[in-house]
Amino acid sequence: MTYWHDPRAEAIVTDAISRMRDAESLRGAGQAREALALGRAGLELLADPSVDRENAVELTAIITLTILVEELAAELQEPGASGQDLVDTLAVLKRTGDAMSRNPEANAAAPNGWREMQAKWIPLLEARLMTR
Image (cartoon, rainbow, N blue to C red):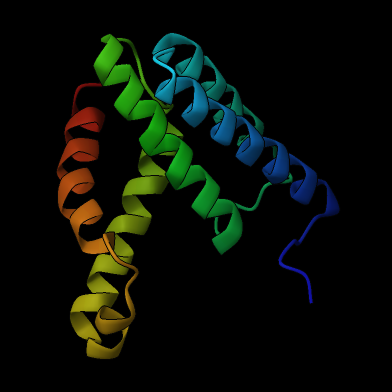
């Protein structure tokens, strides 16, 4: 069983996730500017047309990198993620929040921290999109 609709997408997502891990390491070492550059590079990879922005695996990478880039950009007072990355991340956070509110089983199965992430990031991403 494969999660990839396009074989190129697997390599791209793997590379983007590697950049995200490296960015997290740099961030932990106090190198926020370098971490931001790597996070942005990961998001640029995920903008490739072979990446299915509706696929759960690919969307997870987009969401995680978007949040990382937005955190670092805010810290450094620099521009953050692209408008498309903001829109896609916001849509998923809202969509899953709506689904969880309608389905108690989905709500109970939500990963630890998911609701807190939604509560924090939905308003922040909405505000970022308003200022573009």
